Amino acid sequence: MSWILVGAADALEAEDVMRFDHGGRTFAIYRSPSDAYFATDGLCTHEQVHLADGLVMDHIIECPKHNGRFDYRTGEAKGAPVCVNLKTYPVKLEAGRIMIELDD
Amino acid sequence: MAAAAPLVIVGAGQAGGRAALTLRAEGYRGAILLLGEEPDPPYERPPLSKGFLTGERSLASFTFATTEALAEAGIDFRPGCRVLAIDRPAKQLRLADGGAIAYAKLLLATGRAARPLPGAQADEPRIFCLRTRADADQLRAALRPGARLAILGGGFIGLEVAASAMALGCAVTVIELAPALLSRCVPAPLAAILAARHQAAGVRILLGTGLQAVMATEQGLSLDLGGGRRLEADALLVGIGAVPRAELAVAAGLATDQGILVDARLQTSDPDIFAAGDVCALPDPSGNGHVRLEAWQNADRQGALAARNLLGAGLSYVELPWFWSDQYELTLQIAGWPARAARTVTRAIAADACILFHLDEQGRVLGAGGVGPAGLGRDLRLAQLMIERAARPDPAAVADPTRGLKTLLR
Image (tube, rainbow over all chains, first blue to last red; front, side, top):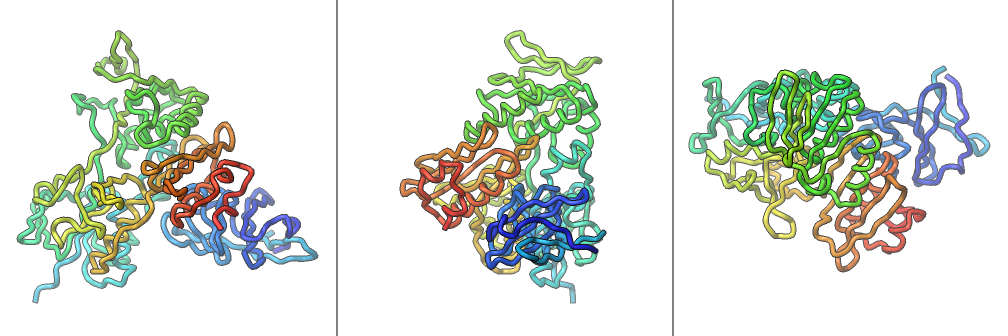
């Protein structure tokens, strides 16, 4: 496991999401309405659409294509058309920068 | 003492499958029978014309209630089961295999069938329709690289298959009687973006063109397009709509009108029988007539609601209509009630991306539709929220693609 630099914390607005690619994988990074940061796998478990194109409302990320909904804090799928949970990753802020912890 | 009769669901598609799962999720402990004509357990139909046809997705990836999951939930799932008749006085179903099943309450989720080509040779193996997994398997076998595919009907099925067939290396011609593609339920500016994308991909589109006759030869199919025009093809997909499978309801004397008539709680004219999904006709919330929604979301949500009402919840169906179509990298989504609007505001984002907001006299958003790359989905979802909240955004701001829609929601 190691901590990977994502970018500046203020590059992401509150209640928003952005894409982060690393090591041939893709992730979605979230900033909640209360300025907490979270990370999940980038692609929706329903049809492999990138969640960074989706809408963040409170603690829910909605897939842009078919409205699959997940709680991005836990990865929990919130009902059809998604039933497979998203994988989540630990996130921390260090000197104003977002770091996520990934398997090596 | 005899066991209580089960809750019986006829049709194991999106609505029927969702209903069965919901009955258990709601805590119902009694017997549930799920009768499906197809051999497969409940799966989502949208991938049939897209990822399943191109081979990118397996049936397992969009089966939402596996045989194992149904068994584990104690749902008695019977595939390949055809119901012949409903005996309402006896509260029994008669089956094609000669059996009979008693029901305590019944849910009809029989869906729709592809509308057949009038006068077509039913046994011609090069003429296809697309409704089921088996249909998709047959069509896929015909979509070899270089194959000439003719598609009758420039609607959703026709255009989604056109995009998939182009990806598979086929030569595709779409034949559409109307002067534009998708003219039945997509606003012209959105349909035009999709039409341009198909043309850029190399799909030949023949508008204002009907199919007069099909001649089968050893070499293939020869299509008579009228006016001396002919089109040679290796395969013909007929995508001219779908008809509700209301035969059982009609024969049983339930109220029907191009679908099974239900009230807002999805109850038919028999209080022990409910209907959900593509087969049913729901009272229009405006109070005028009925609406017949044919979409994944409608089938899924109605299936869930019907299950609750089978258990006596007495809930009304109030979901906002919403459907999508994915073609190439573009997604089309339409939500709400665009037809009721007094005016339309256009948010022109790019050559291949546009959202229309349909407003009522007071400026409330009644409906919205858009087409564009996947990233447009975020704005389309915000548009849906505007409809749900009866928001009255500043039309000039909505029309300005540099103004974020999220700020307009608040």
